[in-house]
Length: 166
Image (spheres, rainbow, N blue to C red):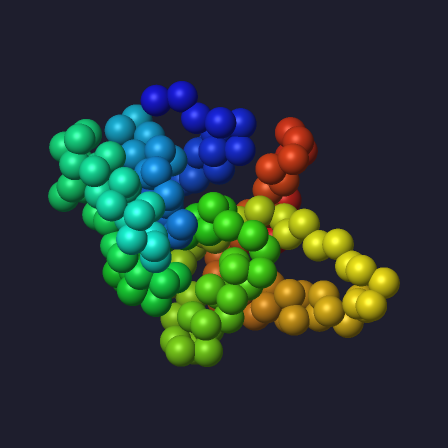
C-alpha cells in the first residue's frame, strides 16, 4: 500500500510495539504497519460513524480484524494496556491537546505505560487578539505527557524536517 509523505514519515518513526492509531480514518497507516510486520498488533480508533464504517471495511477486506482491532472511541481512554505506541496524527493540534488532556484528567499517571507518543508539531497561528499565553496550556500539557512517557516524537507534515524527540 502506498502511503502519503506524511503517513510514511509516521510509519518510519513507529517502533515494533503494539500500536494505537487515534483518528485512523481509512486505516492505511495501521494496516500498512501490520501488513509489513512493523508492529505485532494494532488498534485503529475512530469516533465518527462514517469513517469508522470505512475503517472496519478496510480491515475486514484485508482479513486483519483480529490483528488490527477497530475501536469506536473518543480518544485514548479505551485502548488496552498492552499498547506501547500511540499515534495521534489525523487531526488538528487542538483536538490532539483535547484528547491528551481528557485522558490525563480521567486517568492520572496512566500515560506511563505508553513508551512512545507520535503527533505533529502543532500549527499555531495567533491572531492579533490572542497572546502567547494561549500557548501555555499546550506547553504544560506536553510537559505533563513527557514526564509520564518514555518518548514523544513530533513531526512536521509540511516538509521533510527531521522529527524532534523529547
